[in-house]
Image (cartoon, rainbow, N blue to C red; front, side, top):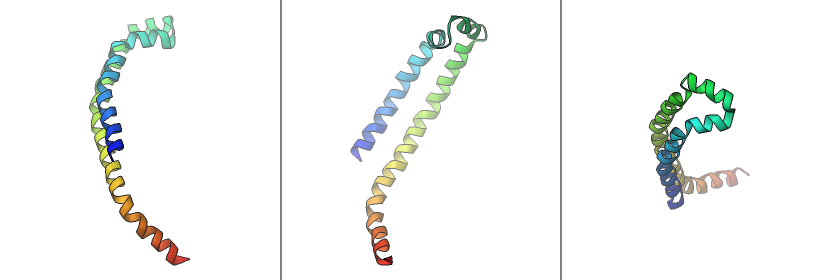
Length: 95
């Protein structure tokens, strides 16, 4: 449970810095990823503004999603050890 919580906490803490880096370097990412000609076209249609909006959206969605996934995983980690002996017992009795 501690490892699961540590992984979730690490992901939660890294959402802002990673998405902030992506938003700050959107133009550079476009220039290196798609080429200079395509980057100039992307700048003319304000693609970096779209990437900025996408990162804000991802920040709003990812943090609650991490909490929900953590809660489901924590519940699974608590319930599976109690259910596993019952399931194994039923399988053994059927044979």
